[in-house]
Image (cartoon, rainbow, N blue to C red; front, side, top):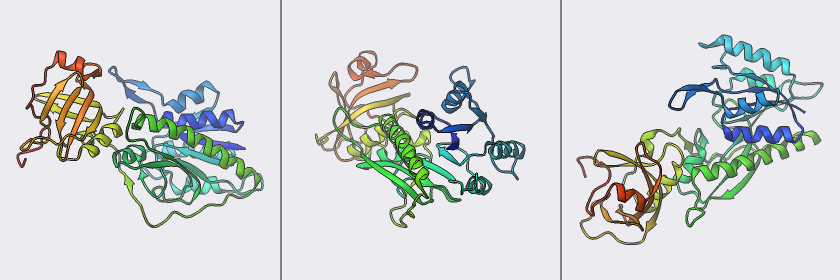
Length: 337
C-alpha cells in the first residue's frame, strides 16, 4: 500500500516511523516549512522532515495548499507531487495546514482500479470532545479522566469527519505518575501509531466502516497561548494543579513574584484550608517541603519552579537563592481583587 504522509512535529514522526517499519510504502511526505528556532533563530527542520530525508523519502514543504491563495505556486507544486505519487491514501497527523477540498478529492480518486482511501487523520482525543489544535493540553487542563486517539476520515470541517477507530486511555491526575501534556503526548503518539497501522491493515481486507460523530458533547481545543498559562490563584487548587500539568512542557504555567516571572513545574493540591482573610496567591509557608500558596478554595504546594534564565529547581534549592517570605502574594490579579 502506497501512502502520502502529512505531518510536522514529533507526535507525527512517531506514526511515520511506525508505518515505515510496518512495511508501508511512503513515497512522499508533506510537512511545514523550516522555522527559526533556538536562541540563534536558525532554521530548523521538522521531526517528520528529518526522518523522511534520512530514509530517502521525497519531502514537499508548501506554505499553503490553497490553489487560489497567496502561495498558489507552492500549492500547485504540491498538487503535482501528490498526483505523481499515485498513492492509495494520505495519513495526516498534526500537519498544521488546512487540507482544501481538492486534496480530499484527489486522495479519494480511484487508484489501480480501486477507490482511494482518502485522507485519514490521527487525532489525539475521543471525538467529538476536543476538536481543534490542542486536544492534549485541553484534556489535562479540564481535568478529564480519560482521553484517547481517533482515526478519522477527513472531510471539509474542523475534525468533523466520521471515525474509523478509537481507543481510550486514562489520564492520571494524582500521585508520582500524574500525567502532564508531555507524558500524555508520548502515550498518545504510540497509541495513534499502532491504531493507524491496524486501520490500514483492515483496509487491505475490504472497505472500512466509519461511524459519524455524535452531535452531543462537542468541545473545541483552542490553540494554546502564553496568556492561557498564567496562574489565576482565585481558582481551586485542583484546577490550578491541572493547568500546571497541562502547560508542561510548553509554554509553562507561570506567575509573578514581585518583578520576577516564575514558571511552576510541579505542584499538588493540599487539603489545608487557608487562614481566614488569606488572599489568593498568598504564601503561607516556604521551606524544603515546598511553597504553600492559598488558592480560591484550599492550598497548592509548589514543589518545583524556575526563575527566568535559570534551570528548574526543587523548592529548597530555589528558596536558598530567592527567599519567599510568608505573606508574599504571588501573581497580579487586578485592582478588583
